[in-house]
Length: 389
Ligand SMILES: *Cc1c(COP(=O)(O)O)cnc(C)c1O
Image (cartoon, rainbow, N blue to C red; front, side):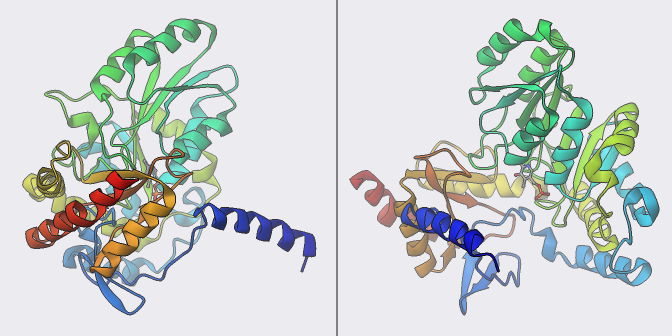
């Protein structure tokens, strides 16, 4: 035991506690599509990213079980050694087809994907532009690349162009990164417009579609929200949200994917995903592709909630209610929990200071009556408190 080490972390924790910013893991038994058990109580969860409830779908579970029986529980090594079980080839082909890309590479997680992809493509003489609300792993990938990074104002195309005008010419290569669907705000990036700017300035556009695949663009994600597919050469995402499994992916040209397989450290030096995780993702894609209307359900559910509260109409399954103060947000979350709803408080540094919020996520299998009761509670018990702040 090191006394100075424990002293150091204890002081840090005390300071966070004083600002209502200490985090705790709470044991959560997600035993059905939308219900969880916590502290001995059953709650309806409005904070899972399992938008299509596929993690509990019988076909998806059966596929995971069959893969475990056939190939074992672990993949045994990095994909480049012996961890590349046959299911990877199937899933990569399926994702490439869904995203209308030439090829696809699967990573251990979405976070690992971004830490691997960005520094492989971009280096110290290059330029990265990132939306200010980009997910942590896009920003960490940016940091690892050692490129000159410029953060642009959220969804502000004029700011993107201003930065490109001023700095593009002096850099060798240039990457623009953004969430396709913003994880904590639920709004959409102007993907087609960013693609046009990228083309104009010879920049490479990368979208992180963690919250897009399975739920927007008929389940194909944020490149497919317009009449034609947006030209996004780097479509990245995760298998751990609407796909109901675990893992990350990049859909891109064959040349890019070949290069990433050769160079991305988080792919090369990390063990391949378990057969069960890959098989579950394939089965989930079967469900999504069989019924595009099903993929629209989470957004429709979110819209019924925003309509009930006269909030701006939801464009994704994510609806933020920004309360500002972290303590107020924790209390609002506790109030909903007492009423049988699980809605986690999201606090800085996950979101900018002063924008603590309840983040509601809606899934295909939520009941209309539960959504209506949740909306009524928010209207009667939480919005008045916010107004009184
Ligand atoms: C969740 C998330 C990730 C990380 O994906 P994991 O597979 O959970 O590691 C990356 N980007 C965004 C925008 C996310 O919301």
